[in-house]
Structure formats: structure tokens, C-alpha cells
Image 1 (cartoon, rainbow, N blue to C red):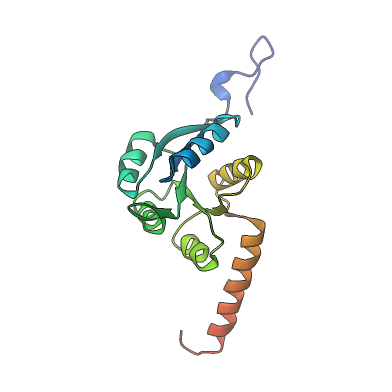
Image 2: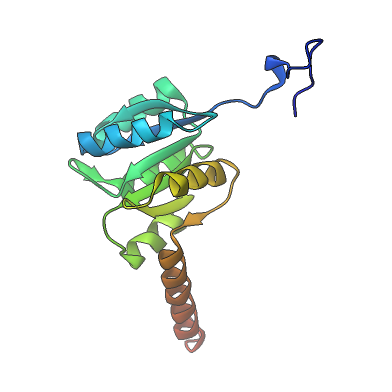
Amino acid sequence: MSSPDETGRPDESDTEATLRVAIVDDHPMFRMGLAVAIAEMAGIEVAGEAQSADEVAGLVASTAPDVLLLDVRLGDGSGLEVNRWLAAHHPGIRVIMLTMSEDHDTALTALRDGASGYLVKGAGPERLEHALRAAAAGDVVLDHDMAKAVTELALTRRRGAAGRPFA
């Protein structure tokens, strides 16, 4: 919390840092829409954008994002592979995977490999803002339906493995 100056307004030097978000998606119109939506969010800015897996290393090096929104399927590679690379080389960056489909196995893979969230691209701006802030705070974020399905899938797999003495 910031302390007020002599005018009663908060001292700008004490205010929270702006949350920096990078977007990686191979669809230009979707990327632009995300950027516009994020620009409307108080305390959050778009640090940079990329359209391919090959551009991620440069994007991260030049923008130092707090959160990276990452398409699961990119034109030149897998967002899942990029997610693994980020977890290994930039573990401080929170990754939220974006997808058009509700593939539960892909969601589990992304989370297992370090993603902080998994959102269907149809999520609204309020849900996106919540996901960005929650991921930045260290929480894991899933769409409601996806969270339920992933939990059921994980429990089913755990019960199946419990019946075998050696996985």
C-alpha cells in the first residue's frame, strides 16, 4: 500500500509495479484483440507480442514479461514445447496456455510441465484479467469446466495407478 504525500494522494514511487504481459499467438487478429483487452486493464500492460515459437526467446529477452499468454498450437511448433522451454530457462515467467479446444490431456500436460493456467480462447476480458493477476500471484488458473474435467481425469488416473504396485 502506498503512503500519501502532502497532498493526500498516494506517492507514485510506492505504488505496485505494472504487470507485464507478453502474447504469443499465430493469429494476428486474436493477438490484436488480446492486446486491446489488456490495454483496458488497470495496472497491466502488453510488454510485447510474437507469432511463432521461434520468436519466444527474443521476446522474453527483450521484454522480461511477468506472464506470457501462449497459444497451444503455433504455426511453427507446439506451445507445449515452448512451455517446457520456458519452465527450464525462465521459471519466473508465469505461462497461461490458450486454446480453442478443451483437450483435458493437453491441459494436464501443460500444467505438469510448468504452466500456471489453461484458458479456452472464448474466455471474456474479466476472466482473462483474473487469470493474469492470479498467475502473477503464483496461483494456477483453469476455466471452471476445464478444472472439473482435469480434476476428474487426474483422480481417475490416480485410482488406476493405485491398483498397480509399480507405475
